[in-house]
Length: 365
Image (cartoon, rainbow, N blue to C red; front, top):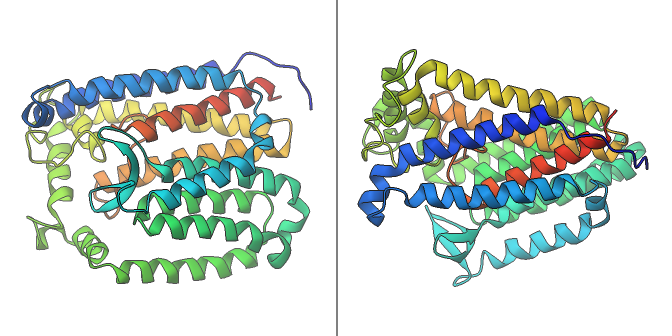
């Protein structure tokens, strides 16, 4: 392995810090009314976002200095630990139930979401597996099936919580990594049909998921229940116009749009900052994708390339799903907007992942 290092990708770093700063401002603006009412502290969510963001930035800078192939050595150990966490979160009394899903371990606001850790662990493990067994990936039984087995076991455990959104992001990311590593198209067509069938079965098996589909197709058919979030999100985006109503001037955050600081933070941003504000956020994400792809193409080995692809794909899928939901282009899934939405585990792990990307950039050609 070539030990020669250069400076990290400062463009990626600046774009990340820009998104993080916008996110911190918008978390306060979106949550102040709800936080003041529920906790008698308008800064409740903003202070925690600042806390987790600060920890995340420190970890990102620290990880930037750790050679990325170090994670390859511990990829199996990290994956096993995450599987153990996924088991623990399902135990009553250990796992915390929020929003109908048993997805957290911890006490109060300071808790972790094991499924978020599993997304990163699976990317690291799969990048190592595909780098070692790259020639086998053209074989369904010897290469593709073993790789997908680990992914589907993790997906099944996440679905026991249940958390279809996080599980779908993980599967989509891993499928993209496997495809890029050289899997055959005919195998993918078979898996695509199998995946569509499984996805339809998961939707049919849960009435609330069917409601989300019907509300996506016609939110006004049930405006006070299943269609409520989509309608309120569109009512936030619409009045924003070109330049918005002004920072802090959102109307929908006053108990119309539920938990506006998490999944629907982009709607509040569009309402207050308008089309131009939303465009700036999308441009910053585009810079992150662009630099991430460059890093993947310039990585000195297959492991680094696949690791970078996995991280960039994970971020891209989450951004597309979140903004698609907020703008009414996709059914509600519960996926947060990376670096902007309120959340301890997701924010910290996202910054750590970008730290890995920055380290790969130090070795990239």
